Length: 278
Image (cartoon, rainbow, N blue to C red; front, side, top):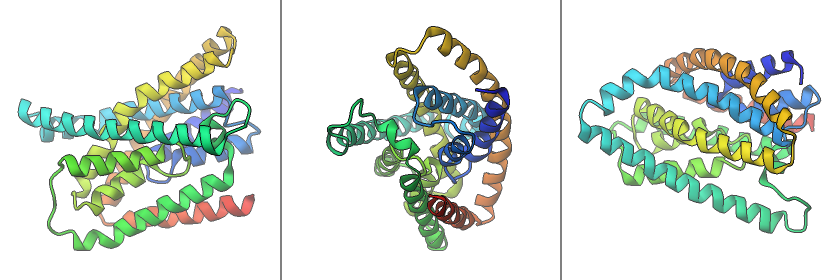
């Protein structure tokens, strides 16, 4: 892979990851346009490494808010940690369950069936992106009726974790868009829904990164290939980190100004473009 391709993918990932428009869909389209195969272990690992760069952007951007809102006392910190753990547990159960169903039922009979093989299916990406757009528009339409804000409890955490789990196998179903929208529909304030969504992203990224490294090694790829990819991926992580900080500022601004619906409109428009290109 050329250096310029790493730079392009890192910038696309960084800007799109922290906006509710599905960074994966954008990166996969960019990979396709550059003649790369998004289903290979090398590409899926690179994508997760770029996600890791934006994960650090999330930590830097939200650290002060998390510290002041949730970690001023041990009681608040423990309560927030429990909700994050509960949502992540539900995500893991749903995500793994979907993986088994897809690979053992829908891909039965296929050689080396892996859920990652779906990542190159542009029509499926378009459908998932359209579903994310509709969910965002639904949440935006209910915003005005959510005057009585609810706290973040077990019920809310379970629902958000469940929706996040549904996003995992389907590139295009924006994780941030779906989880923040679910929070809004559950009458959680937009700021809290955003903070909780990205706290979940920080917890989810490391195990997914380890899974993709294991998948690459399992594919019997040479150690030199892994070393080379990790080296170029570090550059991509740095660029996605910087782009992610800019994207977070944009997202927070639009959330506070009631412009959430525009992300949904964009998702639908981009889904239509992908579908027509196929």
